[in-house]
Image (cartoon, rainbow, N blue to C red):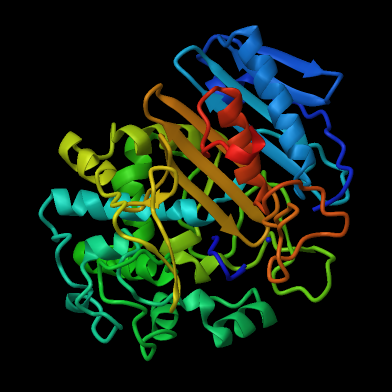
Length: 432
């Protein structure tokens, strides 16, 4: 789960790009046509490809390899699904010691991609008349700062409610014992006495408290645990058999080991694989895998199978470029079509999706609406790399990145999008 300016809960120079076996059944299922499997000796990328042109496949291979080499990630799993075909690739290893080649069927802690599920469930309940997006949060959870903020404003990060993940006592407790379970009430109580950051609706501020509160609302309205609601309303209808909201720290195999520098003194990464994710709850605790996230990315971008056409249109229209991003008491940044946040959904030009980050893991799920392309990247670290990584954003010795400080999944996703000819970021005029 990633927030600018706070690293709650994040690699490795000269990474070798290694071969891992990717079976066609991992991506397509036993009832689908067999795909071509290729191991490229030049860059040691292993992939499954079906239907794409040789030029597209080559561009994706080269971009993935180059971007991965600039990250701190031990390993990566990547997929691109277009109308023409699907490309899946793995690079690197499942562990820091580089003993187990990365496989395509690993489960992943998806961090803030969880938010897309939570807000979708909220929108479904609004469709059914079980709640109104105009309801104030005070109706459901009394005593919060800016209690008059609406559910829609929480979903769009416009509530002005502070994020508990910036709370120093929370950070101290979390890193002192990452195995400790947290309840939703404990999390929101951390900010109950805090002053609001701004009046509701005036700015955008990425607060995990918003999503925990929405999870509490969903449980109240349905009288069911959130894991049941998500399973009934989203996961089962879409056939997402490897996606779940965990109720404890259990992390079913197969999965990679995840590494972080958050809460670490020094620059030697620690294994955060089994840290209790309860502190993220409906803001960042879910688990999924590549197959499921490909399905989810398409559903998220189109609304098919999860929302009515009217509700999906409302979601995609929820980006308001007139509302600035709150960076601090005296600092603002503009929202633009290249960088904006809507209802549980981020926008990067014509890509719609979300990044997710939890200690040890980093995920990107994106859908390119004009062409119906879905892109997923999963890596087993949250450690950033890049020339501009600041004091507060730890990197490993020999930081391999160039250019901006970025998470690994974001760097790879942007490279793949550019290789497809549909960039996620605006070109840098200085680079022309």
